Amino acid sequence: MADVRVILELAHTTRLERNVLAVAAGEAEALDSAAAPKLETLTVDAEFAPVALPVVGAGEHPDEELYDTLAAVTVDEALESSTYLIRGTVPETDLPALEAEAGKAKGVVGVYADVGIEPMLVCPGSPAVGTDSDVERLLCTKRLHGCRLDGSGVLVAIVDTGVNIAYLNSKGKTPTFDAGRSWAWNPAAVTPGSAPVGHGTMCAFDVCIAAPSCTILDIALLHSVSAAPGGTIMSGLLSDAIRAYSHLLGVMRAPRRPGECRSLVVNNSWGMFHPSWDFPVGHPGNYSDNPNHPFNRIVVTLARAGADILFAAGNCGADCPDGRCGSPPVTTRAIYGANSSPAVTCVAGVDTTKVRAGYSAIGPGRLSRRKPDISGYTHFRGSGVYPADGGTSAATPVVSGVVAAVRSGRPYDPTDSTTSPAAIRNLLTSTAEDLGPTGYDFRHGYGVVSGCALASKLRCVTRPVIDLCRRYPWLCGPRIDICKRYPWLCRGLPVPPPIPPIPPIREPVPPIPPIHGEGPAEELAELQGADPVLGMVAATAQADDLSPEEVAFLLGFAQGAAGDAVSPGPSSGRAGGCGCGGAG
Image (cartoon, rainbow, N blue to C red; front, side, top):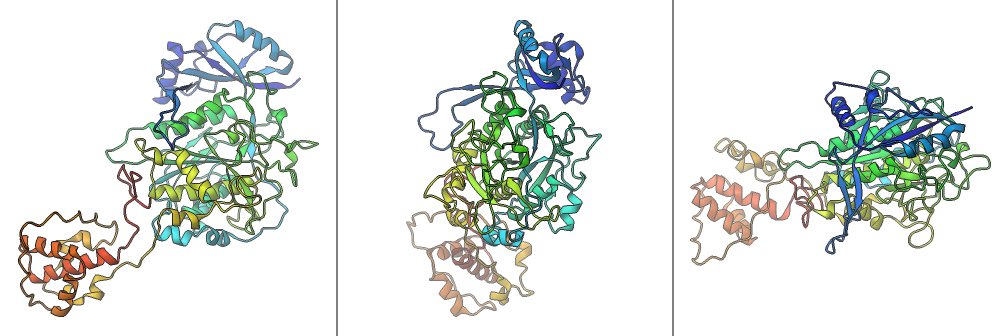
């Protein structure tokens, strides 16, 4: 007789709240047995610490809100308002008895399926189509990176089997790694950043194709669970995924320094493969079709906090379904649960010739019909972990990397809905290269992600950095140390703020006296007549009593600022409103 894994949702009690606080403070690691209800048919997992689940509600969508589709979602994270999750097992034949017992027990809110989850890797014997260099070319990464859209300052959580940073470095990928904000289902079993080379390392490599300068958070979720349906050395449980997402919610909610932006991209290349892994559709504890399942709720909560969450569409496509899709395989409506949530970006797979991978799951999705949202490149030779980085497992981190690159220039700002996860998802889908039938379709979503179109949309134009000393060598002689007096001019990046508009001039500005420095007077005269800004710069320099050489330098720099900008400049609108700037 098989055991069924379940998640119990409990109402708030003081003991449960204290248990959660003790775990957060490092004073406890497991469940306080006195906090759990006594149910005869349930064997409680005493090692699983309770998780507080914020209350998600529905309010009125603001009339003026055009970008954030979650604007009507309300979240109450107060511990006294939250419910609490524990887990356990019950003999399959006793499940109805447990449900009846839980219905009568004080404080039990619900009983839900603790579904087994596995990576979306597939077809290990199929030859690779192209390489990661082809993916870089298709995504126009050179152009994106030239505009500093490279993942800098963006957290990317790889929710998977664990990441091996040393292996990534050996393959030329050198992202920042944040061990302090990483997480593991069991720290005694796996050390974040030093996990065995496997599926999670492949995902991290593929993120770095478009976002080489991102900061990796290793969220080591998947592991060996013998009881999981079709269990492999890489599988897991939704109850552990809830713990992982609770940790990431804490990362997003942590105190911030003034002006600090916190953009978080969450990559999930895993999911459920067959309805038999779940409670039946219509059962109150069902996961696949039930937005009220605790994991589906915490996904919405994290998205509402500003995280860009991406899930693989799955590998139960009709042309080449994964063996875990069943026999006969279930290939219709095979995008289950959170993978089809309206709060996430669901990713299908195409190869580097832009042909859909036969295993890529076809919509509609279970929670939201229009899934997948977009396609990413897959089945190419890249990380070296496998002969091919394949499945929607690889397509998803490729797109996650593009999102992280975009976030370098358009960081999340809770006061600006144009930077919401929904707005970024709309930016990706509206610039995607259409494949298949015109417009949206259930095989490709809105098309394959296009870094080239994104660069154009974000007005990303790369220009060469000005070498002022080569252009005006007479300004860099021994008589004047420009870099010492104006160090911000010699750093190259970041670009100085734009010069404000010229105020109305009521009195004529006196002419600039001739400069008898080392530079040619003819060139200075030409510079002064080239742009109205130059006159103001010259007047300002005179007011500061600068030397003739310094005046000449500032005139030359003003010409560079007007015509030879080294970067795209600040975002339009409010996109850079929290001080992280970039292409907008």
